[in-house]
Amino acid sequence: MDKRTLQFFRQSVISVFIVCISVFICLTIFMRWRTERAIKDTTGIYMSEMHQQIRQKFTSIIHLRLEQVEGITQFYPPENAVYGEQMLDSLTTNIKLRNFS
Image (tube, rainbow, N blue to C red; front, side, top):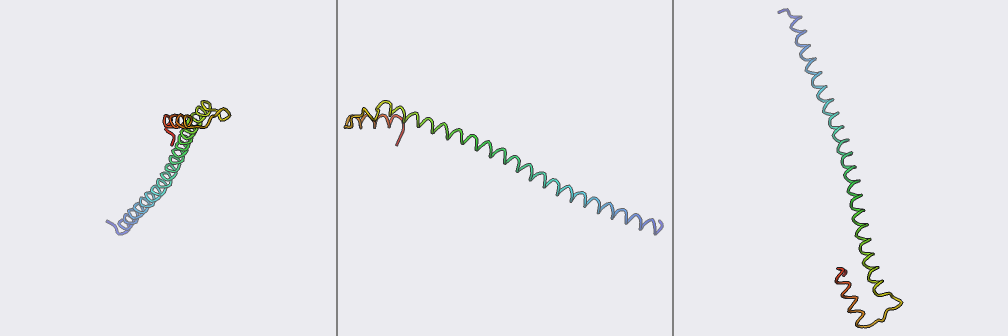
């Protein structure tokens, strides 16, 4: 083979090798960026939904407890209350039934 042809072949192989390496580097950087963006989006959606669910559960529990307290106060209205041992026993029983501490 001619010396010029051999040199052209070497330069072509080296050029293709450099182009391949640069393409793989660019793809790696792009895929890393896309992966990080996808993870951030997924995490944002997950945390938003978890916040929503926790808020709903907390609100439900608070409303349930307030209804239970209203039930006790309706059963023993403060203006008609006769403070004594019988009332305290009855309140204690009601509180234990509703799992209050």
